[in-house]
Length: 103
Figure 1: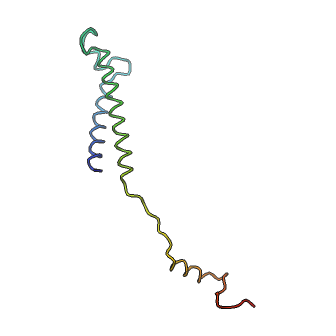
Figure 2: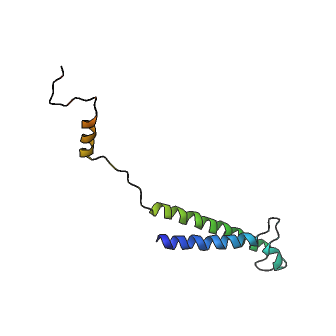
Figure 3: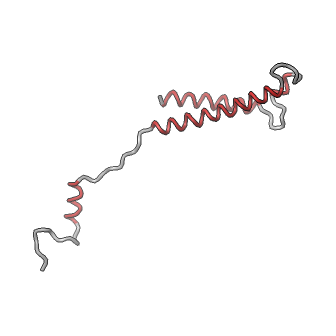
């Protein structure tokens, strides 16, 4: 599952890079090469499509990254066993053994 999501992230990242290169920050870009805006799928529709595609690809990358993170096994901390706790308590000099009475 993790490998599949990783492949999706890689493909989406490559496509996102290509879509961003298509866009022109001043409003031209690929959409200005399609002729008059009166055509079906003209400039405005192409800009909307490219914008939606950009946000969809970015959302796909974010969602897949979150899912991969949630699927990772959690790190379990080592819990102290009672035997280790007893050894630690017996080795401390401040405590007196329970079988001896204080003077």
